[in-house]
Image (cartoon, rainbow, N blue to C red):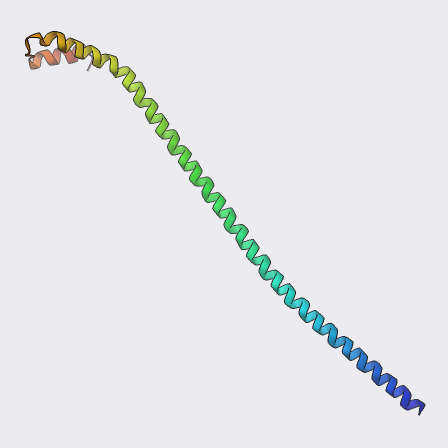
Length: 121
């Protein structure tokens, strides 16, 4: 009878141990599922970070190009005003000379050419 009691105690211990092993296996499986979900979430975050970095690089490049275009436009505008400042007085002088020579209302081609040569054009 003592052997039977020991055997029953051993059977109960084995059954209890088996239940604990089963619970631990279930816990490990749940942890693996949670880990897989966390890995997926991390992969998504990493992909979002890569896309955001690419977007920042593209935006920075577009900004650089836009600044270059704005600078080129400003340079062209400055050059145009410089040319206008350079040519404006000469044009006014030419207009004044044409008005003085055209008192009779008839300028010859030679007269116009002379005026243009005088104006440096």
